[in-house]
Image (tube, rainbow, N blue to C red; front, side, top):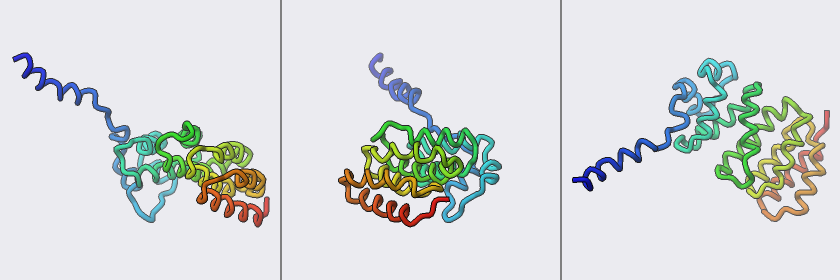
Length: 190
């Protein structure tokens, strides 16, 4: 009888310690915007959809049980919010250990950071992005090349991009670096 009771209780013990979805309590209004296709809300619309907008977007982005489309959208939406909390949460994706899991999400975060906080504070944009040119994940390096010229002074990035190109082995990253160098060369600094 003791053995059969153990077999009955074992599944319950597993369920008791099963991880909860990080984004389980995200409001449906925010989820609707995350699921939308070809529609981008304004920051005000996002804030009306969730009282804890930055927290909820980050929860969706970090929750592996969420669909990948929603996770990428959540990261992108963080870039639209001009708050210290949104910047901090987005920056955390850049600061993840090089080569960490969720590399595709880190690629999105690099581009989102460049179009959000990076454009809002040009002085810290390149210093924050340039170390990512040495990331062990090729996709993160390619995204960083694209991101470096999205900030408002792309010519400032040119020398760094040329230096990375000289040692880059990955063909896709080399192509991204070459495109970024061309953009930086043709850009006018303001």
